[in-house]
Image (cartoon, rainbow, N blue to C red; front, top):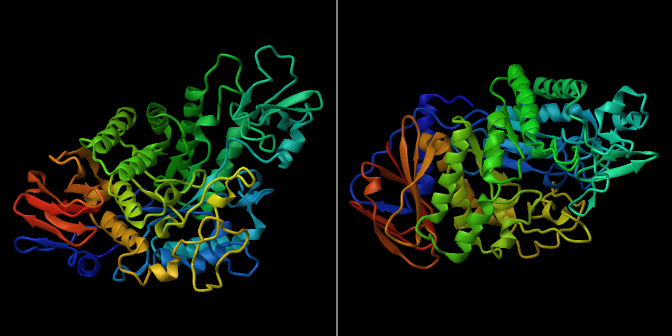
Length: 537
C-alpha cells in the first residue's frame, strides 16, 4: 500500500504516542523523524497464516469461509495507518482453498475451483479485493507434490494407455530399479492398484505426480497463471523438497538437485507472469538444504528456529548470544546460496504442536518468543491464534485437528466456527478480553508488528550478532541500505540487568516491550523479560 509523506508522519507519530513513549525513559530529548516509507508489497512486512475452516463463519454452518475472513479483515489490518486497534499484518497466507475430499485440503480434486464449503469463486475474488483495499497481500497454498486419489487425472492414470498414466509415478512391480516395499513415516510408499503400483509419499490417498513429465509442468504453470490472474500475490509451495524424493526414485538416486531444478523452472514462470510475486517453500530440512532451495524459491520457512527460540525462552539464558550466533550462521549459509534470499521465520505452524503449549501457556514467555522471531530478518509468519496464545497439539485419535481449532473471538461472536471442539483452550483468554488489557499477549503482538513494519532496518535489513557482557541478553544489529538498528532482549524473567551498549551510540530507543527501560548514555537498564529496539533516525 502506497503511503504519502504526511500519512507516514502521522502514522509513526501515533505509534510512538500510543505504544512506545510510556514504556521507556531516554536521557536527553528524543526527536522522532518520519521514515521515507513503511513496509509494503508482497516481499516485506508480516504475514498471517489462516486455516479458512477455523477462522470466521459468515453463514452459520459452523465452517469458516471467505466471507467470514472478509468480515474480519479490519481485525487483521483496517487499512488506516492512523489507528492502532488492528493487528497490523501486511500479508495473509491461506491454507489450501481448492476442491478436496478432506477437512485439511491437501488432497486436491480440482486445482481450478474453490472448496464449496468456503464459498464461491466470487466470494474469494471479493475477499482479494477487500484485502487489497487494506494493503494486505494474499498468497495461497499450492500443492504440486501430489493430488487427491479422487482427482480425475489420477482416475484416468490407472489406465496404462491413458495420457495421464505418465502424470503420476507408476510401476508394474517388476522393475528392479524400484523398491516397492519401501516405507516412510510408518506407511508404504508404493500402493497397489490391480497389477500396478503408484507412489503416495504422504498417504495412499494422495498419489505423487511425476514432475519429470513436461506435460505435468505445463499444467502446473497453467494453474499458477490462473490464480495469479485472479489477483493472488504469490504461493506457499507445499512439500517443496519432496518433488523428487529418494523413496520414490530408483534405488540409490537422490532427488534434491532435480527438485531444485523443477522449482527453478516453476518459479521463473511465475515471476514471468507477475514479477513481484512472493514464492515461499516448505523445505522441512537442514539449513544447507533450505539454502540450496533458495536458489530457486528465494524464500523458505526457517524450520528449527522456533525450537531454538523456545529453548532460549524456557531456560532463560542468552548463552553468550548463542541464539543470535546460530541465526547468523543460517543467514550466512543462505547468503552463500542466494544473496537475495528472504527468510521466513515462524514459531510453529499448522503441522506442529502450538507454541503456547510448548511454553506452558505462559503469556510472558510467549511475548519473549514473539519478540525474538518478529524482530529479526525476513518476513515473519504468525499462525492464526498465536497472538492470543491459542494452544493445541496432535493426538493419536484425531491427528492434527487439535492444532487447527476454531479461532477464539469470544463474547459469543457470531463468526466463531464450531466444526470441531477445542480440547486445549479451556483456559485461553479469547480475543474480546485481550483487546481490553494493555498488557495482553495480543496487544504485545500489535506493538511488535508496528515496529517491525515502521523501520526499514527491521523489515529490510540483514542481521549480525552483537553480544553484550551479560548472559541474560540476546542481541543483534539489523542494517539496511538507509538505516541501522540494535535489538536487545533480556530473556531472564525476573532479573533487571544494567549493560554497556556502545552499539547503540547515535541511535534512539523506539520500542520497549515493558516499562522500566532506562537509558543513560551508553548504559541501558533493562528489566527481565523485556525487549527493546534502538534505530538511527
